Length: 114
Image (tube, rainbow, N blue to C red; front, top):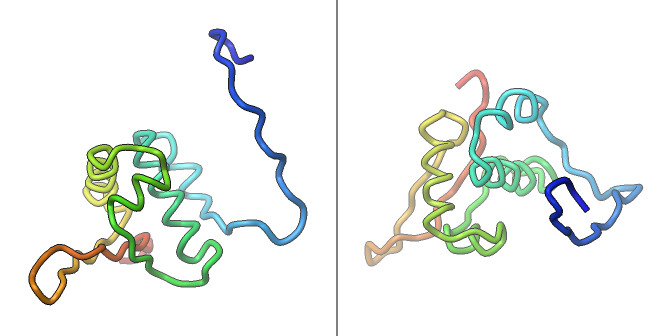
């Protein structure tokens, strides 16, 4: 039990071997203390899905898919994405289908020298 009497499920331990994600220290040192819980979750997921384990610079995903993966509402994820973008933490390429309807956006973490 945690302080406050909350019960939490037991989680799996950290595996040995290759199941790791490269993670920039600046995210832990400077981003984590200032971003909301939802924005922090989105940033971590983007880090994992880009250079963290996939070896790519950008990640295409819909707000709905992010919300499902992170177990938050689409409204919460939209607000979190705005928070990250306004802070200059992410770069977003908003995309459209041929008929003009919204398509999943392409996200990447912003490099320090941009």
